[in-house]
Amino acid sequence: MSKMSLSAPEQSEFLKNLEARFEKNKDRHKGIQWKDVQAKLEKNPKKILALSKMEATEGEPDLVAYDKKADEYMFFDCSAESPKGRRSICYDREALESRKAHKPKNSAIDMAAEIGIEILTEEQYKQLQTLGEFDLKTSSWLRTPKHIRDLGGAIFGDRRFDTVFIYHNGAESYYGVRGFRACLRV
Image (cartoon, rainbow, N blue to C red; front, side):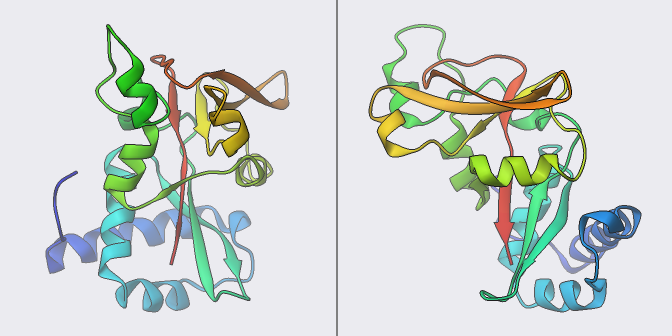
């Protein structure tokens, strides 16, 4: 994930793949034209790089909304399960450092910062779940409110029994089936 930019051919190929996903899942972004999205992306190479890193960690980013007020397109991880390349991590640096043994390799907050993305909020996660069924076998860390984090906890979500659940855990915990989903605004 340390790559700082994409070559012109890599960028072109990535945008073609992103467009194919966009066209395949039109129900996620009704009324939005790819040419408008692509024009905005091409003005923001750092955002294209961040999206490519979301892709490299198997997040399958796709456009899910347009914020008219901010004039921003919003991409979420739309992989069926929590992205494979972002699993087995605790919530944040403080949680990682608090572990005495069996430390995970990274934390969700640190990975998101390295990629240039933001962990989904509870509201965004519920919005994503209206677009399909996600995290049927996995779970995803969510941006945790300060008052919960100050007490040592962190929240995560999943979908079981045709219902979206938001749970809590110690922020230092990590599991092979828990990763995080993210949002990128362009």
